[in-house]
Image 1 (cartoon, rainbow, N blue to C red):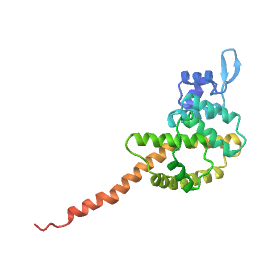
Image 2 (tube, rainbow, N blue to C red; image 1 turned 180 degrees about the vertical axis):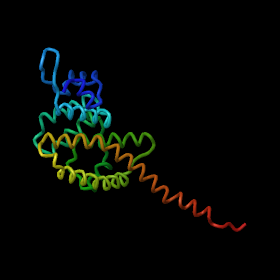
Image 3 (cartoon, rainbow, N blue to C red; image 1 turned 90 degrees about the horizontal axis):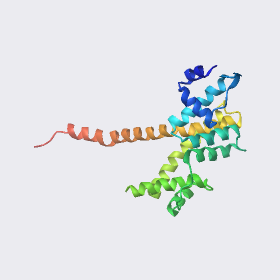
Image 4 (spheres, one colour; image 1 turned 90 degrees about the vertical axis):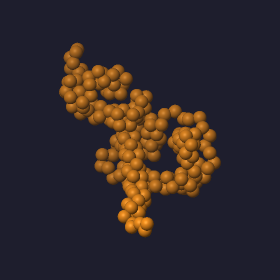
Length: 216
């Protein structure tokens, strides 16, 4: 397909496609003449991947580049895929000191040998919450970890059951894209869960109180 057809198939403007080509995020097409290149299904797939990372996960171009490079040159094991994805998602290592309370909560979860980058970003997020006046206690962190452990187990089960994940590059694509684009789903579900729990606890109780006859 020509460039115009590639743009139509992916709903990506030609100027954006050319930018991705210049940045090396999108492989060059096959030149069939001095002024015309042809593109194939692999370009459609790559463009959709890039847009999912940029639009859905709001990754920087450097983050997208790290994932693209890892897809083209896969790490040695599936476990390493998560490290690559986290490095692309999280960015540079924050300059923080991991608190003992954080480490104790992780020990109680049975999480040993945590990836330093992910651990540092966890502490940075905890520090940000604390500065905002909402310190996350060790008990709350433990509760969050217990809930998200179930999410992680499901994620890994789904990964291993996906017939598309048959190559290292396919597994990395699944991990990287799946992680970043489903994070907003977890956030939205948390808000819905809070809304439903609030309804159960407070709204129903207020309605019952309003219906109770008053003895004046």
